[in-house]
Structures are given as C-alpha cells and as structure tokens.
Length: 292
Image 1 (cartoon, rainbow, N blue to C red):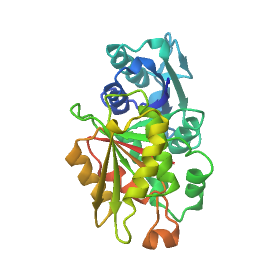
Image 2 (image 1 turned 60 degrees about the vertical axis):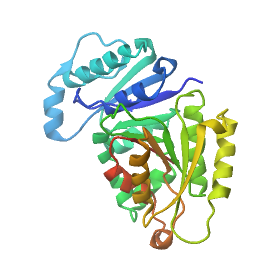
Image 3 (image 1 turned 180 degrees about the vertical axis):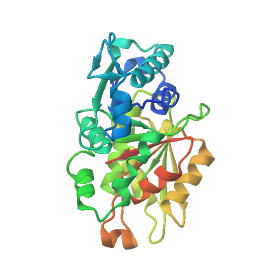
Image 4 (image 1 turned 90 degrees about the vertical axis):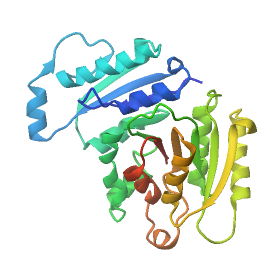
C-alpha cells in the first residue's frame, strides 16, 4: 500500500535527516508519496532576513511563498529523492509563515491524513516543550485531543549500516497502536524485521501475553513469524533499557507508544510521554517513532 509522509525541512540544506532516513529505510521509496513542509519562523530577526529574500522564480508543485534558503533545501531534497528513483510528481511542497507556533503548525498539518510526520533531529527539539511540561493543560490538550494524532518520526543523523525496527510494547493500548503503525508501515518491506521488546520494571512477568497480542496484530498485516523476534529484558528505567537494546541490535528505528503504562509518580500525576521525551533527548543513530 502506498504511504504518504509529511517531512519537515529547515533552511539548512545540509541537514535533511528525515529525507535521508526514509530514502535509506524503504526498499523502494518511489512506491510512496511525500509532502515537504517548510515553516518560516515568525520571530522578528528571522522574518526580516527571509521575507526580504523571497524566491520569485518557477515553483512547480509548491504551495505558498518560498524563501531563497527554503528553495535550496527543497532542491536538495528533490535531488536526494531523484537518486532513489522517486519521481518529482510524487513530491508536493507546502511552505508557509508560522501561524500558531511551529510545533502546533506541524502537528496541525500532520493531522490531515498522513501516515507519519517525519522530523529531522533539529526539529524534534522544538517538540520537547509539549512533553516536558506535564502540568500544562494546554500542552496535554494538544497531545490528547487536537493535533497529535499522527505518529512522529524523529530522525537524527543517518547511520547507513542500520536496519530493522525495535518495537517496544508494555501492554498498554497505546503500545498496541504502535504495533499497528509498525505493521502498517512494514507490511510490504520484507527486508525489515521487527523485534518486540518488553522491559520488565518489577512485578509479575507479562511478556508472553503481550508478545502474543502484538504478534497477532502484525500477522493481520501479512507479517510472518519469520520476520518477528522477541526480547524481554529488565531495566531500572524503561528508556535506559531501550537505548541499550538499540545499540546492541543496530536498529534503524525504534517505535514506542506516546502514552504507555504509567507507574509510580508518573501514574499519580498522569504524565504523558515520559519515556518518549527521554529518548528524544538521548537517542542517536536510530529514528524514533512516537505513536499517539
């Protein structure tokens, strides 16, 4: 099935980590569709510099006004796609001035039916405020009710030697939605295998039950048991155990539920995204898929 990805791009044509990741991860990116999203920041210094240098030349397939620096990034992105046999007709570009803040602008656009929102590592830092302010009811409303309805892929600098997906499951409904997302993305990617990871933090062992349900979901997408592995481990923190497994396995991506099982203080105060935000700040070399 054709997938449609929203990929954010900055003014820095040398970054484009999200573009590079999806081109390396998929066996044939030309089977899918991409929308590039560039948001011009609204702070005075940035706007003064960029709006005075608007690109007025041809801009086929581009919606909105285009700055000179944004055009360089877009041209570089299309060059990368062309090297991976992706037709320019499969790439749409949307560019706009910041309206509600870059985070909400990205997530609002991402809610329009994309399979994933793909962010370069630099863009991911602008998302952290949502997860690091758990008492902020506005932020929680964005996560739970409004914009954060599409999986976020956060892509650091590419490590070409990596492949396969580490899929973290904890028995929460949110983690099973992460399983569903991974199954949907990898249904026709036979070269990518999946390892189900359950981190034990105390109490009764539930790994067998959790793995069974997760594997059943993957089977619904035609992913056979020969592509699915299991790993149950223990760790003082879930994030720490996940980071350790990423390095051991050399995974290209790790998928987590944005709001998993809450324990201790996290359960008492209803914190959202605790493991995800720790991984955002520390993960290197592998893409992080945060699934709401």
